[in-house]
Length: 77
Image (cartoon, rainbow, N blue to C red; front, side, top):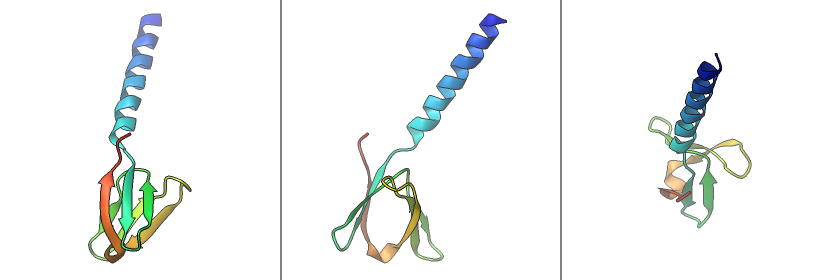
């Protein structure tokens, strides 16, 4: 019983490490010089031309027009 609980707990912790390691912060640089740090990878909607992202500072989900985005790159965490 005790061994089963230990194995289950270890596997759960390992799974959480894998999930948390997959999402990394990104920077979105705009044409006007503003830099936005996102929590995870921004999603680009080709139909509307909007880039959706979760702002790392505020935690709010926001959108910006793709025409205003100069570059997007991954941060070294």
